[in-house]
Length: 77
Image (cartoon, rainbow, N blue to C red; front, side, top):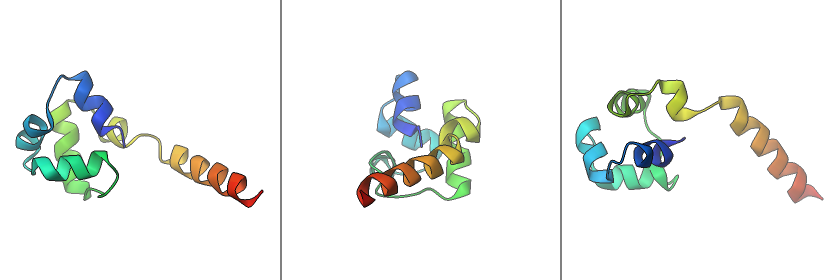
């Protein structure tokens, strides 16, 4: 997810984005650190708050699959 990248591009603090998205600043921090995954509802709220599409926020799902495959291939050898 591109949350931190998009948030910093918009010059927003975690607290500002949290208020705009109806979540806590701690939750934004957890999302940016990959300690949590948003529900689809929260992801949509955050995308709207950032003025981007849901796909722009979460990125290409195939990218995650490809990276996971590359990670598995490098750890196997």
